[in-house]
Amino acid sequence: MIGPNDCFGGCDDDFVEDYEGLLQKMYDTYVELNPDIKIINVVGGSGNGLEPLAGIQEAIEKWDYPKVTSLIVVDEETWQELNRDEEFINPSSEHYTAKGHTALTNYVLNDFRTILGVEAGVCAGAVYAYQLLTSCAVLLGALAAF
Image 1 (cartoon, rainbow, N blue to C red):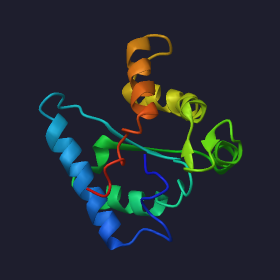
Image 2: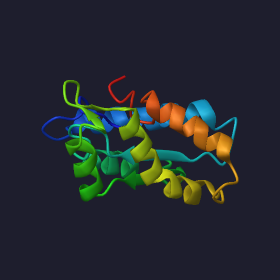
Image 3: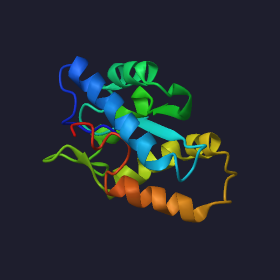
Image 4: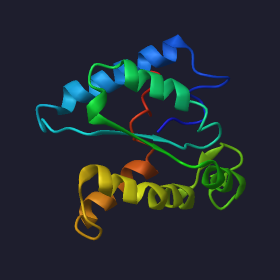
């Protein structure tokens, strides 16, 4: 998930190249553990969280293994609500609060299940792990500036 400090004013070629590098690093790191690796990109971070969408789509299309990637994009209405309500966003940091991360998790959960082929209620441990990762902002894209 790309946050509010990753792509102001549009994503340039450096962003796209760096994002391709991030995808490759994730792939190289995990493909031996699971040859059926799925890299899930979530666009919907706080602040300018929808701005990187075009750059991320371009990086996925240019990357050598686009078929292992999935893209979840928070719809504009939900994103506006998450970024408007101080219950979900900290106005001083422009980052999601714990309730904001939970709301985002709930929004993307069914997409994750579909992508991973997991039925509702089957994998509570994975859902909990995802919530922890979300709360710590450690989703794909958090390292986009590496």
